[in-house]
Structure formats: structure tokens, C-alpha cells
Length: 278
Image 1 (cartoon, one colour):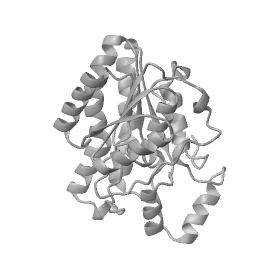
Image 2 (cartoon, helix red, strand yellow):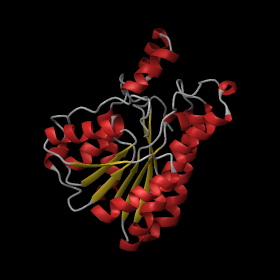
Image 3 (tube, one colour):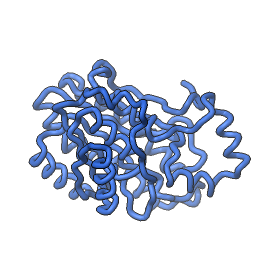
Image 4 (cartoon, helix red, strand yellow):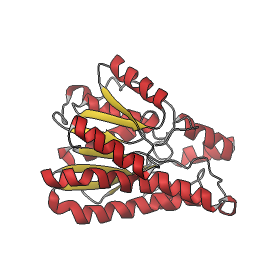
């Protein structure tokens, strides 16, 4: 997720009860997470590293990358980092090629780059530029990253790709606009097509669709665009009576990236506490 001008929040230490502390499902495997210096991406990176993966995190914010590496070190983990603009096709291709030369081919790709970029909520207020920027960051970034890592996965006959859709793309959004909802819906379709095309090579491609995840960025939009009464009503409508946390997303990513999910591909996993069921 491109972090220029946006605060995505900071992932905290892994939960004490996290089984990842005693599980090394990803030993000998390398994982790339795009735009993951903060928030959801960082939580996923820490989880995969805790389970034994060699993890590389990219982001456009060099300072945030340094903070992420320091946080991992405090937890006894290592994160490799690289400055990369996921919304730039040339930078994405060049950086990932360089990273694979340094770290070897990636076994796991988590396309975390995304966000509404604080573009307007109302459809008629969204310009073509708003649409283009959200499409580039949320969908084309995944296209470019997949294009860079898939040849290596095909050559080795194995790979795990985890994309991020959103509850917004399946059921609409209360805080992000039509551009974001549309592109997140498209991510699920892209996931299914890639799963269909690359399954014969031992590569799984799946999509996670979280509801509202309480990062700093989301809290800001949530308070700006919905009244206290509306926020309370939405929370009450969630059967589990809480919002999604970054650790919930990290656990789902780790599952889909593992051999425990070796026979799952083309799936869209709703992660919304039962707020919307299909």
C-alpha cells in the first residue's frame, strides 16, 4: 500500500497466544509483501516471519520501512525492506527483479498495496483522476507484481499468491467511494482468472475481503464520514460485536499462504465478523 501522505497505523507485537510463535510453516520459503511498512501489511509480514519465512517488505515510505524493520528486530525477527512505489509499473518491475536476484525467487506474494487514497465518497464528486489513481494502486499494482513473480513460480512448480479485495467490493462501502468498491470487486475476478490459468503449475491464488479494519487511516475516515450513532449501529450489526483487527487479517493470509490451504484456490474469503454473509 502506498503510504505517501497517509497514515496506515502501526502493527503491534504478535499476540502472546499466537500459534505462529511455535509453528514454522514457512521455513525455507521467501515472501514478498507490497506496500507493507504499516498496518495490515506489517502485521502480515511479522506473522510470516514468525513462522519462518524470509520476508521482504516494500513501501514508498523509507522512514516507515526503517520503523518496520526495527519493530521486527525488537520481536526477534528480520524483515528485508526495499523502497518501491507499487503504483509505478517500471519501479515495480525493476525493484522486484532486483529483490529476486538478492533473495532468490519468491514463493509467496501478498499484494497488500491498496487504499481509497481519501478520494471522495460520493460518486459524482469523483473525477477521472480519482478513478485512475485508485485503479493503479489497488489493481494494477497487483497485476505488475504478479507479472514479476509468476515466471519463477511457474519454473519451480509452486507458489502462493494472496490478493486483497474488500467487503466494499462485495457489499458496498460506508466510508470509501464507488471507485474503491469497483476496483476491489475486480480483484476477486482477477484472482479467479489467475487461479484458473496457473493452477496446473501448482500455484494457488486467493483473495481476502476484510470488512473495516481498525488501522489509523480507517479510524480517521470512519470518524469523518459516519456519525457516532451510525458507527455504533454498524458495530451492533456485526455478530461478533467487534471490528476486524490487523492480526485477524494476518492469520488469514498465513493460512492461505501455507500448505494447509494447498487445495484452496480462486477463493474469496470474507473476513467481516459475519456482518455480511454469502
